[in-house]
Amino acid sequence: MAAPPKRVTQRDIARLAGVSQATVSLVLNNRADADIRIAPETRDRVLRVIAETGYVADPVARRLASRFNRIIGVFTYEPAFPSGSRDFFHPFLLGIEEYAERVGCDLLLFTSAPVVDGRRRIFHHDNRLRLADGCILLGREIDSAELQRLNRDGYPYVAVGRRDDAGGPVPYVGADYATAVTRLVEMALRRGHRRLAYVGMGMTAESSADRRDGYLAAAAPAESARQLAMAAGDSDTSLDDLLADGTTVAFVEDFATAVALESAARRRGLRVPGDLSILTLGDPTVPVPTDMAFTGFRIPREEMGRQAVEVLTGVIDGSVGGLQQRLLPCELVEGDTLGTPDPAVDRR
Image (tube, rainbow, N blue to C red; front, side, top):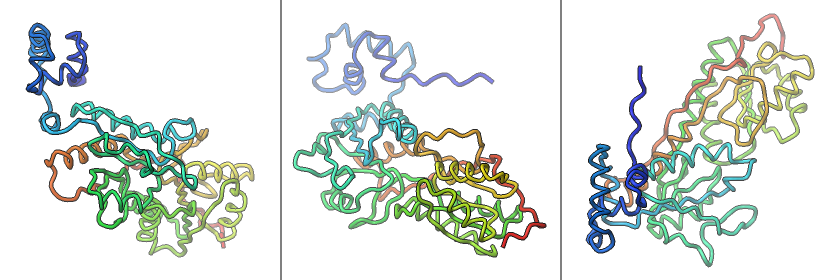
């Protein structure tokens, strides 16, 4: 089946007409000052390309253009571009950029925020938040005090990832980690696993709490459902702990931790999943080389970015009523690391 034709964008119109995207936007939105700023022959050329390509302007973009600067801020609590984190943040930013272009908005990445106690801060003496109509917040952990101030000031924003109330409900677009982990636990139980362990990072972020809640909700039928934190470089000690308790399947919050645990097992001649099943609870947050296809789930990062812009523009232009809090489903990955425990082995 042939792929559907690519949707024509304002950028395409600008390229074909030989003008800037800002000029296309002025023509499309019939701004009052367009006749002064755009020559009639330029306007005619843009309109001719629009007619020839069958371009249809997004109604959301029209509403935005009539009332706002069409600038969306993006604030990341962790650096988004160093090699250690870009693999994780890149899909979010792709989704954000894609939908921003669709609705005719520019993006403003706030990079001047100071680092306080190891974390960036939105609010400081020279913050430029008001240059944007609203802001999208990215980060594994977001300062609740800053969310409270955003709520108190009435500044439009949307968090990527579920957030607890902060002086009031927080608008967000997140991933449904609890349901994804619950489904993985149910899969393990159906395979005959009865001694389970959740291997966390000791984090208090909402995403970590949701994963743990999903694990505990589904693990009730198990004989044992432990929780332990694994520090970086501590894979051998954690493996000893799991084996001593007779654990047959480990649900590992951090992808790099799962890789380290699998490597430690392989060094001892243990089989994954024959001797120990290892499931991952999300995508890598840093580049980690591995040949193992882990069973787990993928986070809908691009779609979260797209919908964050959709929600924010709806809040800005008033087309979205009420508080917006969306949780998107994660995609389960079959992988090769969930097996069936050997009933002949006494693991306790």
